[in-house]
Image (cartoon, rainbow, N blue to C red; front, side):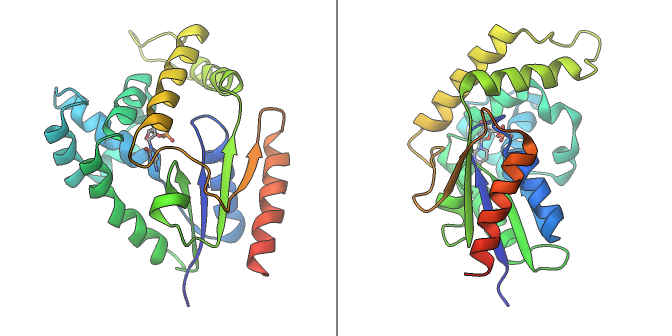
Length: 220
Ligand code: DC
């Protein structure tokens, strides 16, 4: 029996992570946050003292990516976010992470019945044959405000950066431009995706719409 694959793509802070986790829990499917892989590569390169734009260093970090770094709290720092979006534009980095993601989707850990992948290109490049594809978007202002509130609510370590809304908005605009404008695997809605704009929706409303769509694909 082949696994049922749900892809959830979209720009950062649009609500795709929350939705993807909830869908995975609902169906008992395995969940893969593909952004964490790029963050892991970015953080590794920073810790090694290299520039994230250094292709050789970034590809080596992707090829030798260690599972432990995926649960490192620094994965969510703004510096790591910036580094992740830079290494994600390097073709050799994407190639090193591609088979791993496809293998996860084809043979998900736990029951093996299904997988939910969340990222930017999971429906277009990683799993173009996925049975259900969602694209979750929201205005850049709505997304920057959500990220700002998240950062504010977090207990920042002594000496950590203090979140300033204007800075978060500017960072997000720069990251969007890199993620959408890069020539390899840009953030883009798959032609056959269900698109949900979450700017004015609650998480429950987004989940209900997504669930109805996935159920329609399961019974199709
Ligand atoms: O979703 P996120 O913010 O954790 O993603 C971190 C970075 O990785 C972001 O700049 C986009 C990039 N990314 C990507 O290029 N392809 C993916 N499938 C997932 C994330």
